[in-house]
Length: 144
Image 1 (cartoon, rainbow, N blue to C red):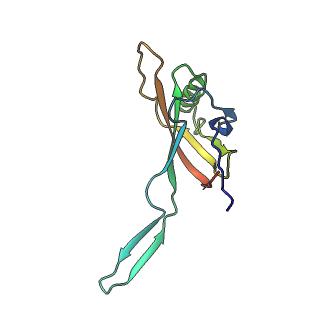
Image 2 (image 1 turned 180 degrees about the vertical axis):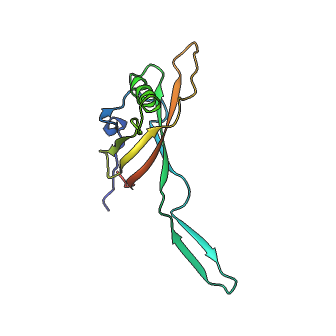
Image 3 (image 1 turned 90 degrees about the vertical axis):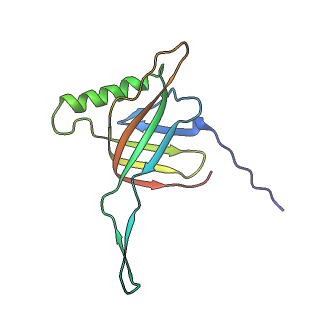
């Protein structure tokens, strides 16, 4: 019986925001991607029927966990400041997350920084959790 061996290497995960490859990730977590709500809604009828409706609006939150020493903080801050100071959604950008260990890919057409993350100055390096709103995306979660 052949044994299936898998490999995980965080260095093989690309996180790209507006053409910039993010780096300087926090110790325990690089990213989190979570959809806001279910893809379908359901309504039960009094007679036992059920109607299932596809939701047309899809939103997700991408959280990028960076060390406070990461130069990628500069990029995300600049995107937020651009969005706040220029008209027409100037901070709305595209992004890509690709796991080269396997098949997982997030292709995001529109995303923007929601707010500055919580910041802490301490006697050691700390983490910053940047939240980005994502719309118009395709996600494929595969194995490695």
